[in-house]
Amino acid sequence: MQKRGDIGHRQTDRRRFLQGTLGGMGAFLMGSSIFGCGGSSGASTYGRIAELGPLRDPDENGVRMPEGFRSRIIATTGQPPASSSSYLWPASPDGGATFATPDGGWIYVANSESIPGGVGALRFSSNGSVVDAYPILEEETLLNCAGGLTPWGTWLSCEEWDEGKVWECDPTGRRPAVLRNRLGIFKHEAAAVDPQTGFIYMTEDQPDGRLYRYRPESRSRTGRPNLTTGTIDVARIVKGESGAIVWHELPDPEFLGEVPTRHQIPESTAFIGGEGIWYHDGLVVFGTKTDNRIWQLDISAQTIEILYDPLVSSSPVLTGVDNVTISSFGEILVAEDGGDMELCLIRPDGAAQPICQVTGHHPLSEITGPAFDPSGTRLYLNSQLGQTDDVFKSLGVTFEISGPFHT
Image (cartoon, rainbow, N blue to C red; front, side, top):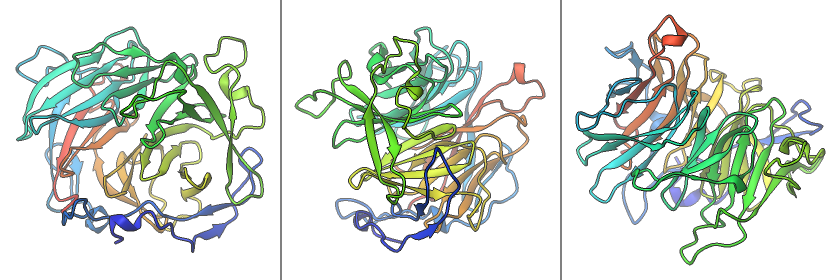
């Protein structure tokens, strides 16, 4: 495996292959450059997800994992996750993330892709016990699907409907959520923040959805962008330029007129069914569910490439591409909406490797909200519908899977 410090040296021997037309695009590059391992500040830790063995038989919770791992259920829809709180875990838990707390603990937040929607939070002590549960978005929202964490410690919750908005939430629940209209009005899926510029990259879950970029007009002394002003650009892949990407400013990002954002710049590129998106080390990785592809945008080079495509992958086990997360060592994990209810690693050679699988749940369920705790030894994820034969009586389940993901 590469050392973390080697991530910035992009591999130049990328494999070329001809892709089908996507909004008039031609050929693209497929390769890898996001993977790496090694700690910071001289730490001797490294990522080892690619080294994990095959999945074992399901445990008592119906979870298949490699040898040396274990699972526990930490929350179920309609039940209080913590004895200290009467808060009931919401329906259809979806996109999530973790936030470290000053006492050595952490918080896991998860959207509710339901009507009404919202966001729930689980507070953990330093020993991993669930000590509190509470809502962090109580305003009237709909279908809060995925979102994204920010470098300044908040959660962006995205509404997945035609006039969907983005809400900025405080993971501690001390401050009320704030509506961020300047991040656009469209069928939001997920968001990822570049800490160097404050730019926010966003996906759109439409058959002809677009990739967007929010550019703040100003930032604070600490680098926090002002989300009340700014512009939104939409991406266009330049034909015949080896994946070069350019951006066009939207004339009406808040959809005040009659033309939806995805149709305001006709020459912009359609990404069919935009899903999860994540930032890591100058790269933005996102998925498109209709073609089951994982894409990588190199911010510095302003180029885009395909990391995973089941039509050409040597191990096309990943289908139903959905939420994306990236470990601190650059390991890309993708959750399945349907498929085999697996969480898969995207390997540097474009192959997909199952990391865990939830069995015995509703056939319309999906894996959502993958996120590591600060130590990198606990992984959180949800099954939206749980173990039920009636989708209208579904009880979403939130799991913790612990083990040597990183050593």
